[in-house]
Length: 235
View (cartoon, rainbow, N blue to C red):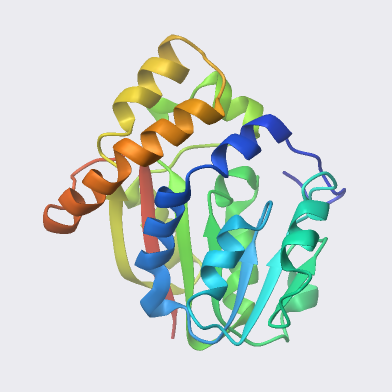
């Protein structure tokens, strides 16, 4: 993704991902201790995660969604929420003075060609001791036709993402792999079989596998996983 024009994203795949309610709640709960009161959600999509973030007691949510086809859903989802502002634009230097306790990227950074510049935007906008909350796809060998269709430039490793975050001037509070079991169905369905993302398969995995994996990964941190979750802090 470049920052020259407002893009459109594949609606069917994004609608399917919005069905991952337990999965998104798991991520938001991991982020909760670092949210603060005023946050930016970059790439807010249809607003399903926005509502989960607002449920954590925020005073102000700036929900950025540059996509022309997704923004109307976001605007409608947040129209009755006084604490939230939907913004049909890229998050960038023009918003550096809004004063943020956290900037949230959930499955967004991989869409941005210059991810280093994007993290610099977050660093600039954060208050001292604010946090960048990152959740990205992991493992280059899991890169699939679906990744390409979704506009993913890359998949990350925990080591590589940590190095990037530190390079821009953020310290690492927490980093870990996420969703160990999810690598298997992803590899079979999207790397080997080159399937598209279906709402039924997403709902099934979300309902049956995610609650169990959440309990397991609370006790045992996986050495590898389908995603990386990272908390970075501005000094």
